[in-house]
Length: 427
Ligand code: EPZ
Image 1 (tube, helix red, strand yellow):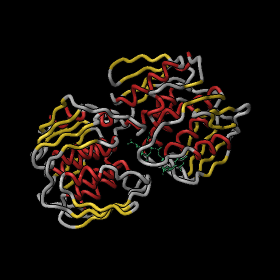
Image 2 (image 1 turned 180 degrees about the horizontal axis):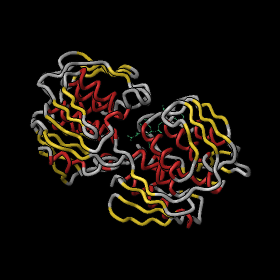
Image 3 (image 1 turned 120 degrees about the horizontal axis):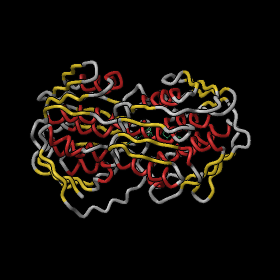
Image 4 (image 1 turned 60 degrees about the vertical axis):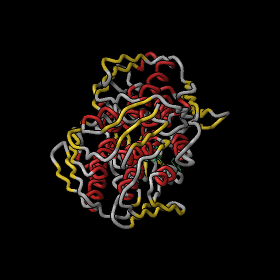
């Protein structure tokens, strides 16, 4: 399937932001650790969530979908601790089942995330964390096997700030007797959300959102009801849509504080930002100013917003430099922007973007989720018609993307196409 769009219209209106995909992907495995059912609300209705739910059903978890955004998960029915199917190999977050199952059942076998397309993405820090909790952790024939006769608290210093490793170690540690300390922990909003949810289930986690997380192991986790936080990256993507199309967009149901780094860059580029309690309005101006940006762990500028700002810089007046410091292979979409007449030069982890007067419609291929969404924004800000192929990627992380865009005036539709996305791992 392809998105086909005609650009040039300023996008204006209201967008309601869905629950955060990357928080939900940790919250669902956390839920299976409870001895009672857990109800998760504000779940985004996207593919990665459905894949993880299906994998959980395969190991015996009882999953009741009350509606598209609410699910009741009962982990007390788990009857298998081996997770391996072709779909789970394609999503990154399958590995949270390692931490959750290790924590609860002291043994887990989960297929390693498959082919990568934004970088090497090793999981050494996850394994180092599990080992510090007393587990054996090995990779055999593409399956990660973790086992602990005697899981206990431990002291872990993460050598790199890793969202995945922080969450995974937190999951494994909440039921482990004794105290665990995670140093150099990731501070992303979804790390905090998963900690809050675990605490609501009876865990004792302190410090999530700072770089030292302290966990006191508890004996059991109880059922709860928990709403997932809003998606920072979906909100940021729509905020950049206002900048790129010179429109005026209000994103609703968000936590403005999570958007600080993104809002600051938009202000630097000349957009007007108005913040409310749970909403932000972005007014794009006729000329964008260039800026330099470096992706960093939270509270820095998110790597998941790097392609979107690069598209905006392609339309700015002057030169901006984008430095990608998290993933080494995250500029694959640049070749697509060049087809539209953008001027971008890549050297190592730096993109030098010289803004051009206009970009033109072209036939593009989405290389991954966030880059795919950014190419759609480029198409909507370009002259003429653009198609974006491989939209399966975009559907993995953006709920009703085309529908939300149409509601703010975009001329975009899904058309059948030659898409044969290999759907390698992206999340
Ligand atoms: C999460 O990936 C997100 N995925 C990514 O979102 C996001 O880009 C990334 O965090 C950074 O914010 C999910 O939450 C499912 P990391 P994750 O571990 O956890 C290195 C999207 O589009 N590293 O924080 O895999 C790693 O190579 C996706 O929604 C190790 O060296 O990211 C990278 O350079 C794409 N060893 C850096 O750390 C490890 O054991 C940060 O990765 C783990 C990571």
